[in-house]
Image 1 (cartoon, each protein chain N blue to C red):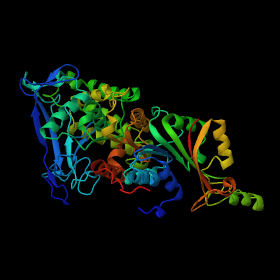
Image 2 (image 1 turned 135 degrees about the vertical axis):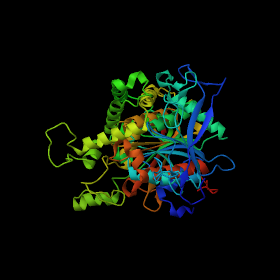
Image 3 (image 1 turned 180 degrees about the vertical axis):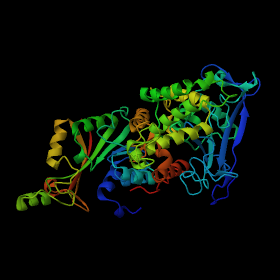
Image 4 (image 1 turned 90 degrees about the vertical axis):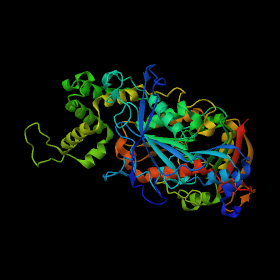
Length: 383
Length: 198
């Protein structure tokens, strides 16, 4: 808990367990899952009217730790630049919740969790999870926290998909939605990238059909999968600026070592990822991305627009989730005559921009939230 | 807000717009007009604007605005989505004029159009006496850096309306700080029309 005006400081991840015993969570596939544990963190204070809650949703491999830092660690949360006193999501004004996803490996139930029926980790016995299922689990959390209506749901990339899914599934529970660098559905190109990611993991013999928990991760396959991911998160220009063709040791080695800085960067990111993310979770979560589809009028029902505002943000150099996909979201909202604001930020950072372009996003998000929270002050006198 | 602080064209448009209307402002710039209509007419306003810096200005005022091109941005709106579609000081920068008017009339009950009058006395005399392309208060750009691609006069626009079967409900001629009524094609710096399908 934070005092007004003070930095968020030390936070602790919390856990909600539900769908126990005779009340499992029914998944989109028809399968049942239970018990379910969901990791989350909160920052700021819920007001008396319970009207100032914002749900922040994370991308593919992130976690519930969005802001502040954990005890004994100096590492800030993944969106610490955006969440806190005076920041885009101002914790002096709003109660910010960051929820993890089911299917992942960051404290919520996923393929690496213990299957109570077998006493072993689920592995591939874990049911396929959709973005809709992730939102079902988050709904239980919001109910548990006693919040009828969220002031805002927001997220980038996969987090943006969850935000859009909230609008599709529970439009009455949200007052505004901020989807960032995301899409109504994955394109064939995005599905193709995800399939290479999955094949790279599954082609590693140490993956053992997902039953590797007694032996250790399929490190090679998972690292290569992540290397591919990092290429798609950057732009041609940002890679040029970051690495150019700089050599690690000044000369060509005439061997297959990492001559170029970009090669050693990718290797470093790949190797690091293996330490912090479960390979099976990567399979499940990328599958959830590919199944997601709220196009063709599913984003928001007729007559639902009256009460929801949208702020759609894209980045010019993002070629993984290009601006045209955000424009598709905007078109969908125009068809329903929804209240929508859209900005394509002229960033060169590629898909990563949603984590890096703090000033521009803040300039959009702060006033948007303020307007959503307070509305206009209409002048009493007419001209 | 005392009305003297408000630009004359904005004051006229605010007078034309009915309270509580749904408004689409095409080429809304920094959102000053939308803000005025939202506050003083309790209008539900939405803008479309191409310039990124202007988007931040609009959002800062609490306005809803879409970053994009007005030539491409109208197709998705359902028929009769708005009471008024405003094209104030933006039509001279549009290439697909007919298409934009067609779409604007489909999605709005009325169109409010404001543009600089190319046949204004100042522009005429610059062309006539100096043989130079007009650079005036309403047409402030030099030939090499103007965003304007259409150069129209009051007479041109009235003819356009006749040919396209558009009925002019109201016409306003702006002489700078006040409205004028005499010889508008010669003396009006800017013109403002309220149109419907005939």
